[in-house]
Amino acid sequence: MMTMNIKRIIGITCLLLLLFSILLPCVQYQLKTKPEDHLRLEVIPSGEGWGYQINADQKVMIKQPHIPGLSTVRPFATKQDAKVIGSLVLKRIRHQQDFTVTADDLKLYRIQ
Image (cartoon, rainbow, N blue to C red):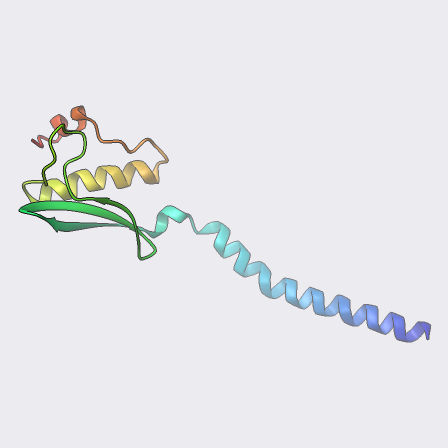
């Protein structure tokens, strides 16, 4: 009877070690993969201009169809302007900074 219990304990222990050795690499990969590695900037048409969105794993995280930080609501005049500000926002997110776009940012990049 005692031998059966020992065999059962050894069997369960081996099974748990096997599961642990299979799951450990998966958990390590998830810990090494930063969420911001899955972020992607996409420039999008918006009305008679351009906007941008930032996607995280195929889901829209930020959709910005107009120039942020202005008192008026209008799209970016050029695709490049939308890309520049979208890239700035993406960079700030990746560096865990406040990603608010200010009037000073728009002046710096000459966006009106």
